[in-house]
Structures are given as C-alpha cells and as structure tokens.
Amino acid sequence: MTERAFTAADLEALRAWDTPTICNALEVVTPHRRGHGFTVRPFQVADVAMKPMCGLARTGTIRAAHPAGRTKEADRASRVGWYEYVAEAAMPTIVVLQDLDDVPGTGAFWGEVNSNVHKALGSQGCVTNGSFRDLDMLAPEFQILGIINPSHAHVHVVARKLEVTVHGMAVTHDAVVHADRHGAVVIPDEAVTKLLATIDLLTRKEAVILDLCKAGKLNIASLREAFSKMDDIH
Picture (cartoon, one colour):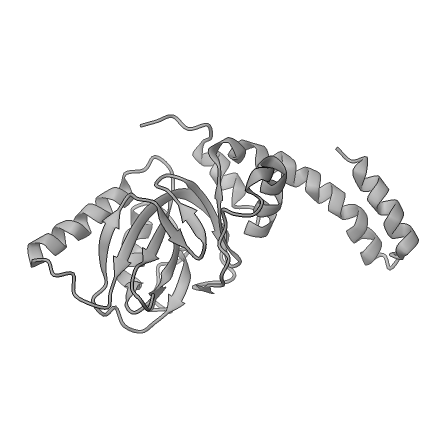
C-alpha cells in the first residue's frame, strides 16, 4: 500500500471542523482549486446534528430502475466484492456512490442493513446522488447525504474503484473526502496536514470583525480599521 503524507489521526482532527470551514482553508492552501472539488447541489441528510466525516473515498456506481441481468451467484459475488473493496483500507472511509439511473434515487442502496454493514467495515458514511431509507433504523453515527426514498427497487452496484461524480464533485478511489450537512469536498493529499494551521489563521482574522459585531461597535469606520488589522495577522 502506498504511504500517504498524512495519518488517520490527521483525518480525525479535521472532523472537528465543518465542511465550509475546510473549504475556506482550502482556498488558501490550494487556491487553484477554489472553483471546483466540492458538491454544488443540496442533499437530504440522515442526521443534521452528526459530527463531520473525513476519510478515504470508496467509489462506485449503482443502478436501480431495472434488474442487473446477472445470475444470483453473480449478484452475490458482486455484493461481496463491493464489501471487500470497502474493507480494504488502512484508514476510515467514506463511500461515494454515483447513481447512474435517468432518475437518480429510484432505488435506495442505503438502509438499516447496509448502513450497519458499512459501519462495521470501517466506513463513516456515504455521499451519493442516490437514495436511502429506514431513517429510524440506520446505524448510529453513520452519516448519509443523499435522497430519501422508501423502496430499494432493483438497486445494485454496477462498478467499483473508479472515478465518480456526485453533485458536481469528482472523486477518485482513495481521495480524502470531508463531508457534513452542508455537502462534501475533496482534500488533496498535500493539503491535509496544512489545513489546521490555516483554519487557526482564518479564525483569528475573522474574530476581528466578529468581535466588533458582538460588542455592538461595528460601523464603517471600525470596519475599515478591522480590515487593516486583519491584514497584519499572520
């Protein structure tokens, strides 16, 4: 397995921050990616209060509108192969599933069983343009961003370990993904260990203006002065 420039502890540390904050820091650390690398459409979220996710992407495509056309044995082998793929990771994972149906979300891949199985295999949750169900029976602390739908129809995995696109965010196998109720973003490997220091810097800069607002002292003159002070914070 290729050695990464970060550890599982580095990914866990990023879970302390919401995804918009991660995006803000990425604009500083990797400015060339400012206009892409994140989702651009809203999701329904299994639990809006849940802690953010941060893990290695396990990517796949699904369909549900029609049967897979495979034998029972082939279907079983495909499902087991998918689970093996999800389990083969040295760090926590996030599943990113692209639904290929003309009407994405026709059938729910996610529910009580799959959420519990994937959590047991080391996954923190899923980002998908497909659907999920069993809202009261999903695995605890397993987040899902997707569409809510009551039926699984003919849902099946089409392919795994390939580049997928979900709501405008392109994701490759093993990419670092951060996600919460706001959406998801891909973090380049080289940026992972630089984000916390950048978040600290941005937080201190923003505090100059926010403190004025909270104290009821913000006006145009104080705002101009605040911008100057922010420029001096490094």
